[in-house]
Amino acid sequence: MSVNKEIKRITTHTLQKMKREGEKISMLTAYDYSMARIIDDAGMDVILVGDSASNVMAGHETTLPITLDQMIFLASSVVRAAKRSLVIVDLPFGSYQGNSKEALNSAIRIMKESGAHGVKLEGGITEADTIKRIVSAGIPVMGHLGLTPQSIYKFGTYAVRATGNDEAEQLLTDAALVEQAGCFALVLEKIPASLAKQVTESLHIPTIGIGAGHYTDGQVLVMHDMFGINKEFKPRFLRRYLNLYDEMKAAAEQYIKDVKSGDFPNEKEQY
Ligand code: KIV
Image (cartoon, rainbow, N blue to C red; front, top):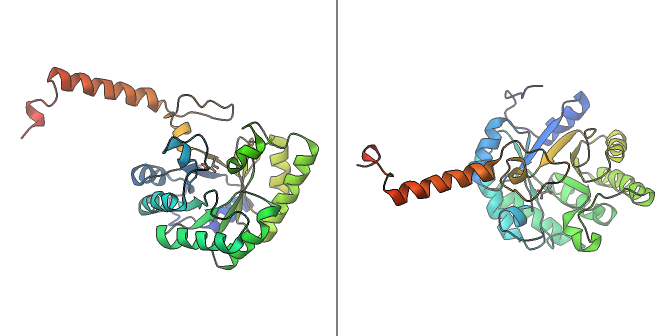
């Protein structure tokens, strides 16, 4: 199915219509203006300013260190580039957990200071009141269940979640709760495809999977992984569309050579 570029701006309602009509949703992360321009121009439905910026932009081991101010800075750059895509921003670790008033303040700061179109947060039953409070202020919320990286120290590993019955049952309950609380869509990360299918069929809101198989209503990847800017990260779910690490390294090596040899700049490249 080709991209419908006639749509002026993707909204949360567009995504829900896509689910009803069986059109898959495309989502990719971006963290800066120039990359977001390319991704928006390609016709991406949703750009996620993920807290994965903590890993791929800042080089941290986990998503925990990134701050609300840093997320707002990245998000405002992405928003300036996005003409068509819906821009959703992660509420970072520590900006919403366990205190729905503080969560609402964090979400309001993201919306006011970056101009984004909605927020994403991790968690099910524990965050239901927070989701309700943010949604009742008019802010769209995307949920996130399964492998939720802000809880990495609780999980202990980045392995597939909900492979056992108890965790799978809890995930189904959590999915129903975040829908009832008012989420407009739900990210499912690293869970068995059969469970993602069950969740997707049980909800009215769209599911967007990463490592959750092909039954979800859409897919999301981290931009650096999808373009091959990362070399080390090779999970089974990842499809790499470019090998930019090697291509950019080769270009940088060539530039160094040209500068050292005096070949760059040449006669035509000077005033
Ligand atoms: O932060 C992020 O990039 C995410 C995606 C992996 C869904 O949450």
